[in-house]
Length: 255
Image (tube, rainbow, N blue to C red; front, side):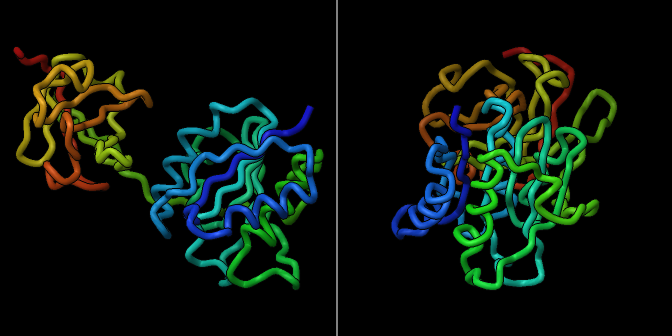
């Protein structure tokens, strides 16, 4: 059975960079099943890439190999990494892109050598794709490089309890402008109050529970509180972005 190899980058599809990376991978592991997660991470936005990768990797079967390249520091002293977590293998720059993955459980982490022939501006093609091919063909992460106990991790907003309230933050803004928070569903009951900036919302079930143009809070498919504006972008309409605090209360309000 061919290995699954997923690709997540900020390369976009207007140029040939994704195709070059796929070519390098398929030349070495022609039987691999290649899945595009996304190539539309905003350029250089490591935090957005980390969130998306952290959300999707576990949807794939054990044994999958994941290439993640959002790499504004390519060619510098930042390390290339290979990681194994729960039977999944990852190759990515050591810039925090694997932060959400590394929260999952104990990981095997190694630093990868950079071939002398590698382009200093295209490690996706010349470092990460060839290593992913080796993993897809059965290589073990531990044999690919030196053990690395100190990978870069992005700072993550904490959850803070204040009386009946839980305070978290927006951790991602998706392409619809929806504000995705780190407030877990288990901490917030349907009908509870959710405050973002000057806006007090009542937690609903879905977008259609409010009129067009109104903001709405709900539990998203990722299991945390999300805030949207029906038929509009919440980030624009509410003037909010990643990092903005969001407060939820255990108290249930009347609709």
